[in-house]
Length: 88
Image (cartoon, rainbow, N blue to C red; front, side):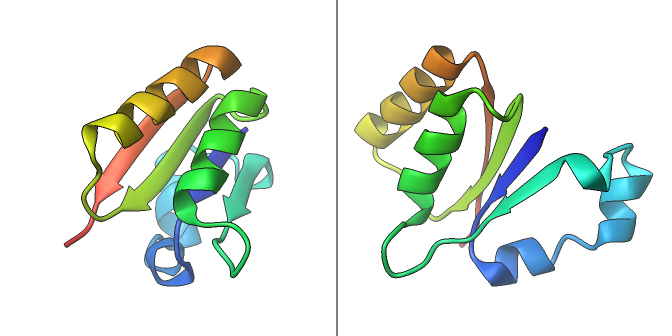
């Protein structure tokens, strides 16, 4: 499955029709939205590390090198791919 991690605004901006047109099976997309207990980084790392999703797409502002390394390590552990979108 494909994991989408980001704020509701970021996810909402990706219409279902666009995802379907790009060949995604909407029944195999997991939406993970940050809340008061789980931020985007922790959700993305957990989704990558668990191996539940073959690819995790996350929306971030800027990331420090150690944060990028943490995501890369989580992806390696879960045999997943991380696709990061930076919004400004």
